[in-house]
Image (tube, rainbow, N blue to C red):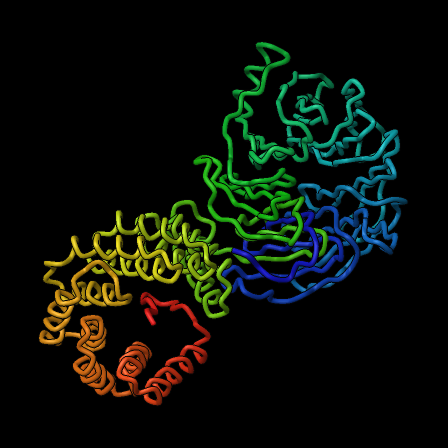
Length: 591
């Protein structure tokens, strides 16, 4: 679902620990709070500031750490601050300064008492989350720090200098330095037991054992531009995002077994998560490890069932791109940041539960149905096509979606595409009434574009299909279709006989209007006028524009110009008042 409010690209997103929130943030630092049960508007705007490069949740969900990143906007001010935002009060409680260049990464320690930040200034800093005081500065990298993490009580950092370094949190000293043969390290993930996975720009994953300071091996992937790595909370699953749209997921135990057999192995993905159309820029697991949320520069945030490898739901994030995402520790809430905003969402169990995909489909159908109606009301036919296309994909067994999309195509003069949709409906529909409606639309469209061969063909195919139909509604549509234009290829006398029978049955309104048109085509002008007046009387509201149009041409043929002009003016005024609006309901405007 698409939410309003973003003015630039989104760079991070996190789930709150209680799992009931989604927040997004980015370039202008605006924080917006959302409730997925009321997805049309933010609950509150809580923060305004500079570009947000990364965000991290306190383990208890009470605080959100916001790392100010490089602002590429013209006139963007320098602000190398790490801020702590109270989720409940929606206030900044701490502003921690000390870095001398833009921040790139932030991570809370699992116990929540401290947090680490990395920066373009080549340093890693450890902060007290209660007081906001700087505890330790780790100096040693020769280039920008790209990512920080915790491995038990040690701080781990990755840098574009081609190293991953492990630091002692107690004294700030470097304990280990893992070299990547000069390749810039762009992403990092660490487990509590000391297993570290790092990613280089060349597409290689490196596995390290910080406990013993040894290398476990490498995985050569075909993915360039690696952007993010994420361990599941239990450490058994590793997810990777890169410039490719797929997310790759490994089972760590089986992967390490293969690495033990050969120190360098080709990539063997445990799972592919396919759905994004652009590079994957950020990921976060839910607290139970069953779901993964991701961002991409395709502007969509998606939530996945990891075991099934299926998308649970997705929504549009920023108007440009989203680059980071994180689950709240409760596994329900979700925050993601971007170039201009940080927005918070509320997710219900059905909104994020793979066990109830029909609920997701139901909501999507409702949203696109409303979108279709708004598009039709505003005569935005391109949007109408968009919504009906999605509805057709969501409900492939419902040919009516193609029927209405055909109407939108026809309004744009895209006749061939309209005809293709309606012809598919004729093939798929089990309802004679629906098939008759499609033939009528094809015939009317051909008449409008002056394709008389196509019009006659539609009439003749329809006549062969329904001339003996006992469904009087279908018979009425058939007679009406064949009297729209003088040369339908069908005997006007047969059309009159069919139409009179429909009038005699008298089960529905509109049959007299059809009969009047058929009488006119059979040159029974006086009888046609009588029948059309009877139709107007039957309607009780002055008649239909179809009545007035046929009365106008009947009086014109009799040389009664003033009467013809009167009815023509009435029909024209009605059409102008309607704005020639196509019907957005289950009916067709045949005027």
